[in-house]
Length: 232
Image 1: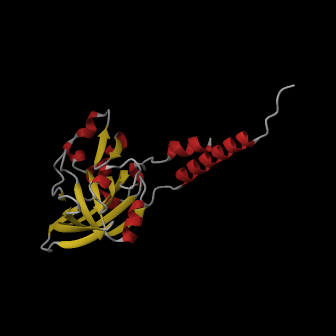
Image 2: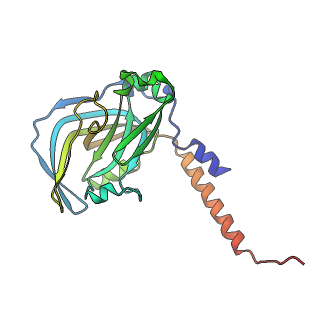
């Protein structure tokens, strides 16, 4: 019962009325004249080329951790700098609650969106969501990024960048510079300088699911460990 309840409520998005007014704003982007710089992660040296300063506040609707056991692309690409992808909504999508009629799922480098409601496919709502490849070479920021949950309301500040390395082969990944594109190449690649959690998603569903799983495992162990009593 505990596991089922936790599973049912885990990853449930907050209602529109629970969103902070800051999420109604558009991301802020401005030109940057910063030169390329170096970063190191996972014993790989990267070249980072800033394209714009970026400031986004939104609701996390889906996420992908590059350390997931089934993620093979990051490992094959020697990409240790992209620690987490966050799919986020903001602006009109948040203000009108269109996201409540959508379903979200993250894969490797992509966020899938589905809905049976035709109204949510309006351009104003589609441009107010994005998949964000989040980069950092700061271990403390990486831990905080990996600790974010679906349903968190967050603010990220940093730079839109392209990045590359020559660790075994020539690797290069760029970034979108507009909110109006879609498909391959439409994701924002953000080198994160600051992370602010404005409002956390409730933690109790995850705890309840963990507790229910632990109780089920303990019950199975006890059942197998019980002495066999043959029927007379």
